[in-house]
Amino acid sequence: MGKELTFTMSQQIIDMASKPLRKREDAILLLLYTIRMFDLDKSELNIHNESIRISINKMNRIFYLLKGKMFSMQFPFRIENNDIQNGIRIYDGVTGILINATTLSFLIGLFEQINRPETDFEKVFEIMMETEQNDDEFTMEQMWTLFSYLLKYDLGYIRYDIDPEHENGKLHPLYHLDICLDNSATYKIGLNQEIRFDNFKDILDTTTESWYIYRGQN
Image (cartoon, rainbow, N blue to C red; front, top):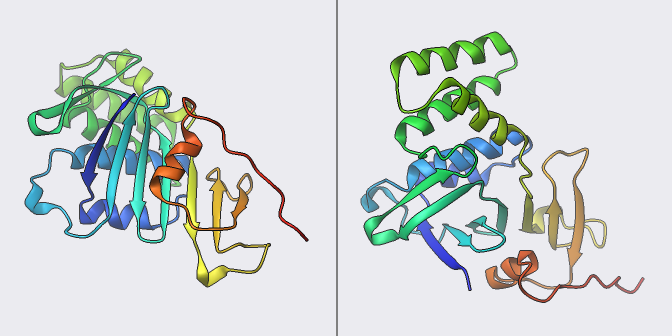
């Protein structure tokens, strides 16, 4: 049985998570800002039901739970000392780097930069050089390895929607799963009823029995 950590979303994360994610860079930035949020004082967090859950087991996933939708991605880091009361420590499993405030600032800066249409490799390299000169916590090689890993690791993105605004019979069911980020790659799986978080999590959990797809009647 894996462990599950639960956090209340800050307003910044609610705003970011409520917008459609269409690019890998947007998803990674949401993930990085979420990790930064873990250190916030509880007085800064929202008083509603929006929350984040991280399942630490074979699937190692992060879940975003908002009104009318839930979505999930693979959590790319390793969590240790995962006691919320005493704080958590997050490491990159490839380089062993501690994902602290310095590491997050570096990664957020890089991904915000590459999200701009005018960015080229030279600008990314300049950011890395400047960070290495001003910080001795990690090397250029470690920075590049971590950055490259986040650029290419499998997000495993899936979203559950309740979408009355665009409901259109079996073409766009009220309850459905959206798979993949990019519009050119995404596809939809209709559901005949509402599901809860435990169902959504169970669909993705490889340690439990599989769910089946049955085609509805015409």
